[in-house]
Length: 306
Image (tube, rainbow, N blue to C red; front, side, top):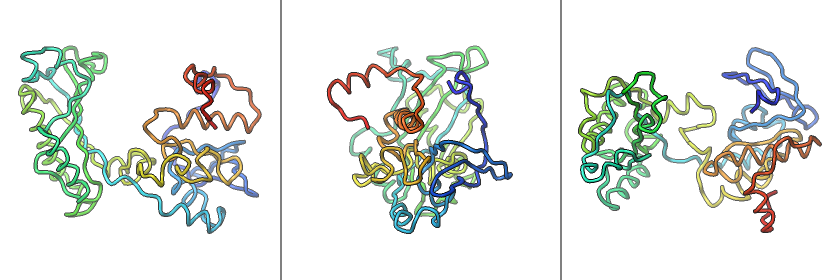
């Protein structure tokens, strides 16, 4: 959509700072010194990085800076194992119902609500459960184009785990032997339910830990997948705070459009859509996109959207 509307995409750019002059955001500077001037700057990373790192406390005021610091991140993240498979999974439960092999996602490893609760208690205590509770999906079962080799398949296993571990902290995730051992346990759980997925049918795997998420994606501090906890003090009008929840910020020309803003990360694309609305309004630009039908219906019902 950006390219169709004559925009330019520059990926993997390292930004040194957001340039603020006379209280207004006027562009960004890359780490190599190149400057991009702008009428508006939209940040989709969290408030800590946007204001405290890329702008600096001296330009945002002490009170506003202090209000940003108590922000709470999620205490869990994803431990993921990506699989290249010789064949699609055949679940034991599918012997009486072949459609089970066509599910979009499987939740495996907990045979009772009690076991599921115990798993999450362990996360709160920064511990890993002896036997993982995982979700698993197999994209190529539904879309063969996601694998270049005919008849072969891909899989994804994910486990909710603590970012900081009680034994070794977050740095323990850097240990190759530690993460391979955990991945082995996750695969063992999958094999328990789909016996044909084993060492004979797994061609290769790629493991991603919470600290890998943080290192790879700027918007996943502490592996946090939604840029901050879903806590009552960080939701609604307070996401991320009363000054920025409508996507405008105290700095003119600077907007927030990431998951740290209202309505959070679960309502997919909503943050970006709402940010685009206020940017074109402030710039006096005519919108080139139609109002989605669900937005029209919400307005008709009197639901305030701004």
